[in-house]
Amino acid sequence: MMGCWILNESLSFLLVLSWLGVNLYLFIDTFYWYEEEESFLYTRVILGSTLAWARASAVCLNFNCMLILLPISRNLISFLRGTSMCCRGPWMRQLDKNLKFHKLVAYGIAINTTIHIVAHLCNLEAYHSSQSEEAEGLQATLSKLGDHPNESYLNPIRTFHTNTITEFLTTIAGVTGLMISLALILILTSSTEFIRQVSYELFWYTHHVFIIFFISLAIHGAGRIVRGQTPESLMLHNVTFCRDHYAEWQTAVQCPVPQFSGKEPSAWKWVLGPVVLYVCERIIRFWRFQQEVVITKVVSHPSGVLELHMKKRDFKMAPGQYVLIQCPSISSLEWHPFTLTSAPQEDFFSVHIRTAGDWTEALCKAFGAEGLAPRELRSLPRLAVDGPFGAALMDVSHYPVSVCIAAGIGVTPFAALLKSIWYRCCESQTQLKLSKVYFYWICRDPRAFEWFADLLLSLETRLSERGRTHFLSYHIFLTGWDENQAIHIALHWNDDTDVITGLKQKTFYGRPNWDHEFRQIAYHHPSCNIGVFSCGPKALSKMLQRMCRLYSSADPRGVHFYYHKESF
Image (cartoon, rainbow, N blue to C red):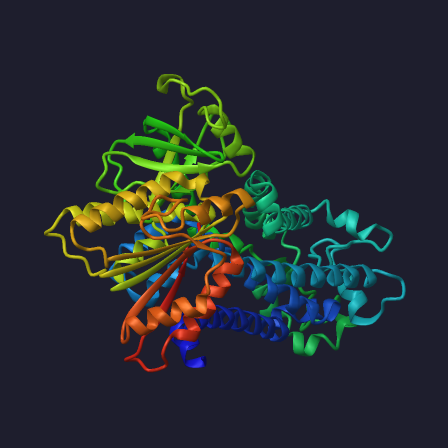
């Protein structure tokens, strides 16, 4: 079991370990630098170790903010998919986990932000306490610097009789720090699975508060609250000797009054590259927004599923890709991802959209779905399309055997794949590396996806005509039915075709026994690399991932299951 886990997840584990290692190195290295650097010795007299905690977490925060935009740069991910380095094997599977890495980095940002805030709250209290009448010695002397001409201050809080938080919020660091914290709280809380399912629009809008987050981060250090001794002052003022002779600073030649300055802001240097890259992504999206999209056909399917056929100049796609769609008449800002359900060989591209939120409900109404009277194509709202972008399903043809598993509307990503297979079967000269496809479809009500059953029927017919019925093995599992349906199914059980789908392959009732299915596949394909692709709920994904590990052989010459989950 452990050997199978290493086979499937070793590279992911090493990448996460590398990310943790870099964070740990940056934190420790920065921490000890601020604990030992001479220029910050007097700062440490007032603040203690919380200075190092604040600065070390700030560096790790900058590092993670540099990474956070890269996994969601869709054009970058699509470009990497096309490079020779990532076009095969385990590196390609890492690109399928871009959103997982995005979330992991977000957790890193949240943890380091928390440490940074707590450390600076302690620093504020230390600054404030050192201005009290009870403060004495070197700490009191350092806090009073700046009260006389030709002196620079070290303590940004100039009097004890003040509200520390209120005064801090009048500074650049305080205001931007508050904006960063509020933006991060909004982003994290709205990213929970519950919020995304209940109101995707709320998640989408609040996620774009990241613009405020990055602007505030870039100028956060401009206030230069963290101050240290200047290099010129260090040459004249030997801190090792003078720290014990602070009473003589005003008179002794060998100990002139130390001069201090704020540390230059550096966050912008960390995030400039990724931000520029993301701006380029937005420019590309705006350019694609301007391109005309011609809607050629609108089909309203049962249970609130809308099918749109579109054309766009120079649009090139591959099976398994997805696009982002915007409808300006509904929202001028929102873009939503939808898997392409057409094949590259067709002269149009299509998507199937199910009503699952405010935006999709408004779109279906605008295009005459949900039982409304169909509208003429000329009167339909304008759509903008960005993409196509690569996804996990593009790797289906890279394996000799592929297992495709869909649940409910998750069947849409496999439509383009099966259509592409259908067209390739029509071309007798086409040779595919892919020799066998197992397709599993789990749904509560197949009538909601009649369009897909029709696709399977045409594919079944074509493969039979070509004598390649062995190429596709499909299994449909119905998990919801009523008493009338059960009676009807029983009466027509001996018919040549299935009473539900009209296909030769009979529908199964209940949920699949994945142990049995994976055992059979492993038995029929020994010494074979098998790709497993799924689109469905998290519970199904976890189950399939466990099955891939369980039935993969520890022997390199045995059967190996490689798991891919569709996510965008």
